Length: 395
Ligand SMILES: Cc1ncc(COP(=O)(O)O)c(C=O)c1O
Image (cartoon, rainbow, N blue to C red):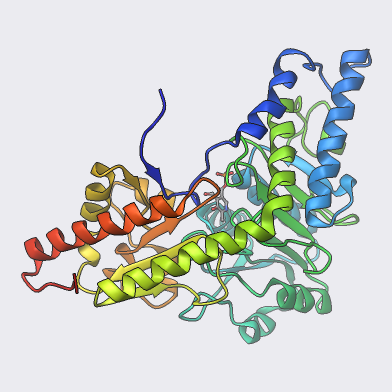
């Protein structure tokens, strides 16, 4: 069954590109060998595996021996933090992360704190940028790892990773960055950015779910993620998920080829949406950085209507339009907790429940955006007449 409607939640996940699906099919039914087998099915699978690894490595400026396939962003982030903590605890037990990381980083830090590690949470400014002076002051001789995401999933702000990389290098501290939201959309180069460990995943870039990778710079001391038969250079054992790996590599290669034109197209659509919001809706405000942000991503709120976000999303859903409140995880949270990201940029807990995230992608057209803005206008009009009696709309 094909789901009808307008999908504007590409930061949560994306539709798999037909070209990616086509690349995966032979790996299910013809080239289905186990990459560890010695016979020709196995050697063929190994070749496909290593070609995919090379493709991925080229997309981030790495060597193929530095890329390890995982089950996705959550696993890569868990592995980066726990793996570095485990193998470097003799050097120190201090880890620094930004306060706006994805839950899979923050919850891993909570767990590590229970294992005797000390975690510093870096504050961000009102646009979501990490303060570099605070970072410099936070690093001490016991610091083993700094983890700051490349781009934030809720507000789209792009962090100054090059500068962070330089600071970490100067202090001889490993630098990990979660690039799940930026990879495939804006350039990522581990050398130019001074990144020692990088998390990427496939389902945000029109590839299959359940596959990702962790880049680990050669020479970085990291404990294995899974013990077993020795796959992924002995660091992550399990029979490789070949169809997903092939799809991920194809998805990444397509993104790289189309990145420039797609970034321009999506930025123009986003600017059109910003113009609509400010022209038609008084009291609207944008969350996140005005300029340093992901191309197709916009988070915004309306003063006075923050408490009605879920109602607004449901109204839009009834009109066939899928957008998100904050992040995918928080939208699914029945209690709809206030977003830690929005609170970190200075919103109060009430306001921090009220963001609408529109994330456009490869399959978003201008015609769809026009339908969305019309529908948003209608939904806001009826909401304001029900709740405030004091219209916030210029419509
Ligand atoms: C910034 C960020 N990190 C990590 C993840 C988790 O990735 P995955 O769903 O592949 O586990 C996500 C996805 O929601 C994300 O947006």
